[in-house]
Image 1 (tube, helix red, strand yellow):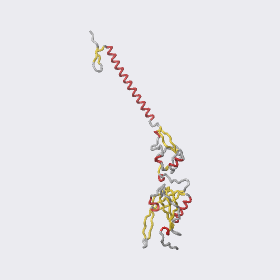
Image 2 (cartoon, helix red, strand yellow):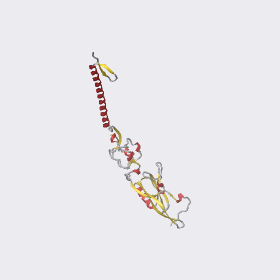
Image 3 (cartoon, helix red, strand yellow):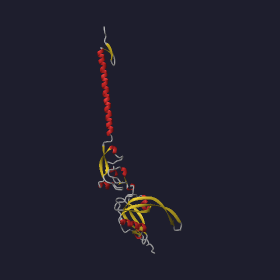
Image 4 (cartoon, helix red, strand yellow):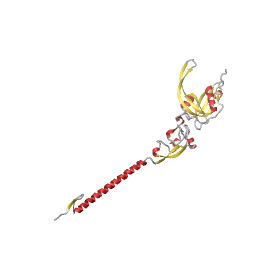
Length: 270
């Protein structure tokens, strides 16, 4: 009398014939092989996708503002835009310069602090105020002229590159008067402040020496304005007056002692 073989399944022993037992084992092995193949295929697909992602990373295009023509140091953004020196271009993200601009909104009202060349991406760090420029920027139709002033004469140090000022001159001979010399000019440079000594004698004859801080300021002027400034600096005393956009200065005759202090005795002559 024969008995069926006992074939162990995953959970409990099962009575099967030898042939059935062999088939069961083959089925299990086949299932394991199929699952292994599926897992392997999935891993290969994931690996290939990872390679593709790394290969395309940074390849997407982004819009950036670039220079179409040379933008000169000191050139205002508004002027460069009006002249068509900016244009939009698309670059790969991996080629995008840190801080690159997609529009000029954030730099409106500023100037280029150095030359910007065609094809160069525009970044905020390349723009600033006139005082941030790498070199003295002289407008094409102007001259650069400098004078040295004390702190009170230059509005206590509030005059900076880009400021607009009116210049007054006070003359003592042959007659005493003060009048406006230049109604509105632009400061394009402010030098370092140095100190000079001045000796003052009082009514008793006592002398005192004091340190006077002086600063050289450079202006953008035309030829006639330059001549007036040189004359005023040589033969009179200059004072700068800081202007706002709405300040209106009128070129008038000026003020002498009779207008400043009506009824005051006339200065002695001779």
